[in-house]
Image (tube, rainbow, N blue to C red; front, top):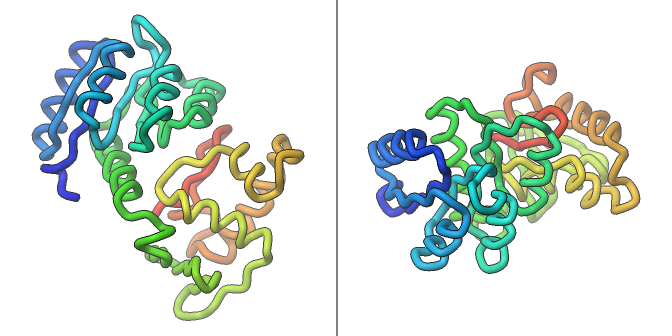
Length: 230
């Protein structure tokens, strides 16, 4: 999907920011729609079916998380939260409600554009159907055969390491919360065992990353979760 065919709905009550985003996104080939409150955002989304939503949480009428809930009632389109709220609890709540990513204000336009591209790529090339194999610059993961290769050599993973990696691969370029990973890999009873993630992510990095102490692919978002960056 080229950017010329991508419609972005920007939801924010900061008129200057909305104007700047419209100018920048349009310059990069996106079709931009805007809304300054949550009620309008939900109506515009329902009427126009945008390809992706960039959403502020602090809206004048309803909270941004309620907008996420409203959208998730009928669509799976990517939602990127753009918010001045820096508390990890707010980020986790937004992600658990259904947001795909979270960018903190102030932000760089290059970062936002990269997050947009990643979210759109993930939405248009699903791992389960179109791409059972994930290729990164450092390793390859085949979900069909459940095999991982690095430098043309198969890497042995334990069942837990594989399960953890598989969740990240299926959510490639998307921020996955600690709670989601713990729930999917270990089960609901382990939702507070954060140290499990630290141990197993360290093991995966040692096996897959060229420089485990400076990972390029298995990225930590402190206090929130992890992202497999392709």
